[in-house]
Structures are given as C-alpha cells and as structure tokens.
Image (cartoon, rainbow, N blue to C red; front, side, top):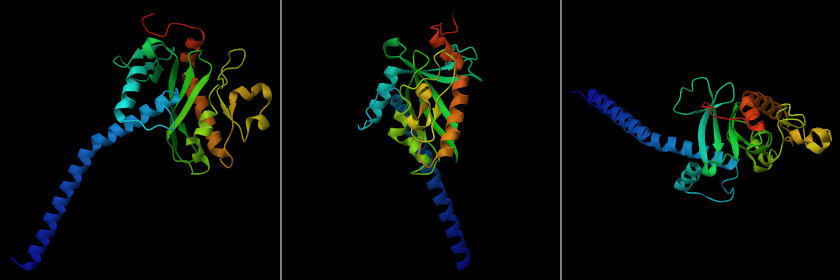
Length: 236
C-alpha cells in the first residue's frame, strides 16, 4: 500500500474517531443542558412570585424543592377554566399557579414576546385578585446590551410590581411602558397601568408593551374568573 493511501486512510480514521467522540460528548451533555434550561425556567418562575432571594446562590436541588412545594402547572381553555397537564391540552394556554399548601396566591403567565431584535422570554405573575401584577422576569432575549437589554435588570422588572391590568371599572387595559419616567410622561390617573421605560430603547419598549397586551388579552378569561371569584376547574 502506498504511503499516500496510508496517509489518506489515517486521516479518514481520525475523522471518524473525532466525529464519534464529538457525538458522544454532545449526547452525554444534552441531558445536563436540558436540566440547566429547566432549572433556569423554574428559577425565573420562582422569582416572579418572590420565592427566592436575588442575591443568594441556590443549589439545583434547592430550586427544585422550592418549585415542587409551591408551583403547579396547568393549561387554560378559552373560557378560562383550568385543565390538568394530563388532560387533552392541544391549543390550550400554559399557566402556572403559585399555591403553597393548595392555596392559590397568584397565577403566572409565560411571556413569549416580540422584541426589537428577537423574542423576549419570561414570566409575569398576577395576584389572585386577577388585577395586580406581582412580578415580572426575563430569562432570555436578544436585545442590545446597555439599551433594550436593560429589560433583564432588576430595576426594570421591579417596576411591574403593583401595576394594574384593569381600570377602576374593571375593564382590561394591560400594562404600558412609558417613554421615560412614568411620573413625567403619563397622567396621574393612568400611572398605575404604566412602568418606567428604558432610555434609548423606545422601540424595545413598544414591542414589549404590544406583546404583553396581546398575551394578557389571551389570558383575560382566566383573569376574569379570578376577579369574579368564579370556579377555575373544568369539573364545576
């Protein structure tokens, strides 16, 4: 066998071996990556209802334990009634309940919003009064660091706490993002429905505001049931 053919075969074998090693490593890491993604989502769900301390580091087992003791996942139908995840859920809306010891304190809506440069993923929690936002978190986005990327900062997310998604007459109005400080941009009677905007990121604010309105409108049948203290389960 010529030296050329030997070299060619050696390179071919080396490529096959390297490919197998890379495939094996990727497969073995996949489970770890999926668990980290799940933990990140669980952590943000817990953050939306203030169940974890922003300044504290948690072990994975601690996050999973807190989540298991406090959060339950459901789906909501077009009438706002909740279905167990084991039921037929095609076309239904995912929703999470913050319910320690089976007492519902808040419900959490997944946010899959359009930003300026891509999707904004997070969670928005609403008190069991069906009207008051109790928390907002973002766990993934593609906005510009230092500008629209400020949506991931605690100062921006804390703005949402206490804001109302309905007016004094109980009509749905969602939550808006002002072009600057709310107190300088929005009439006093409407300030309860707005959060401070991000300087230099007006378009990110516009996109996020529009998406939040669309998402919350979808979940409005659920919110109405909470506001009117109507039964939530399909077995009513």
